[in-house]
Length: 173
Image (cartoon, rainbow, N blue to C red):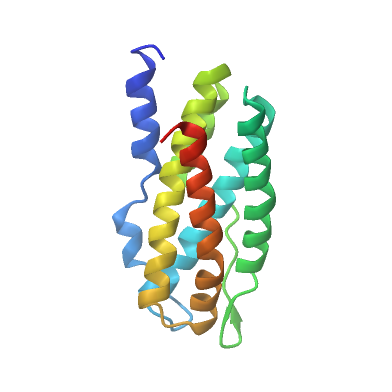
């Protein structure tokens, strides 16, 4: 990889980290801020995983990376659909309709890449995103108050950990 790409990839990883300010989200349905933060971020992150992975299905050089990306599209789409059914009492949380601004930047940056550089950058994003998702789902299990949301997090966490391990393995980490 050229030296010019190293700062570029570093900026992609920095953009993948969620903003701490979102942690103060207010839950209009009466749940804890942890529940509101979890729902909002899980929705945006899940949608982002699908969009980034759709791009990787089209642009990745490695057939293994393409297969991983397709798995992310399929499994995160299913999880996103399940997340959208969660309720707090008689109120359904509003489904995420767009990716986080950081993810838009990642998609834009990846769309200008090709070959093994694309594969490496995509996998680095997947590792960082899944590390963050594992942390968020673990926090919801530990600190959330919405039992349905906690059960969803507990059910989904093993898959996220598997996705993380696959991304690490593919990236040689």
